[in-house]
Length: 293
Image (cartoon, rainbow, N blue to C red; front, side, top):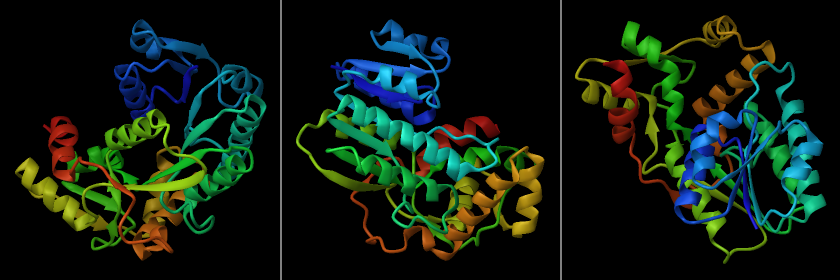
């Protein structure tokens, strides 16, 4: 029986597929563009072409699965992101129920414990509820913010030596590298010793502020890097200029506010269940520095 992986071309799904194949697992990949996972197919992964928005495809593709890794892909062009998330969550739930999938790992997020006030994470709360209603054994993996989000600041780091976000420089945010998220997901999928419905928080080695991040970048790049707190209005104009829909812009502004005021971790213990090994120093050195020259 196969472990089915959604979004196998992204930062997390691709690393997860690699780790499971390395472990000798039978893997099925659901992909819009099979050519993008040809290297995994060459290693023995089964590839099924289709969209996660196609319920009939998802139900058929997960038939006989021993486990499912579900990650709801982003959709920056939707006019109602939470409705989009609910729709895909319903599709995941129908596939789980129809095929009685024994174990599910759902990529959620810190903040999903709330269901309000955390922008795009609100919809992950809804997906958790939909899956909980049908799955006997599910782990909602709730990582902190992705270190890879720093890649969105590449241009301003190049041109202005700064990051520009509507978040105070001293706001400390749980962050984790996607490679560590994939490693945690792989370990959970390969571990048959857990059962029931649970959530697992995953952070990096230490919580850092945005001032901490730019101090690390200054050290790694050998030149000054600053964090600039912009206004929500300035951030809105920038995101609209990038082509995001007004709904997505509002979602992200709410998320940034939750980072700034600490709402994102409201009600959670200080110490997470798991910590990844990748430090931001290492991430800056290996992922950011090569792009910045």
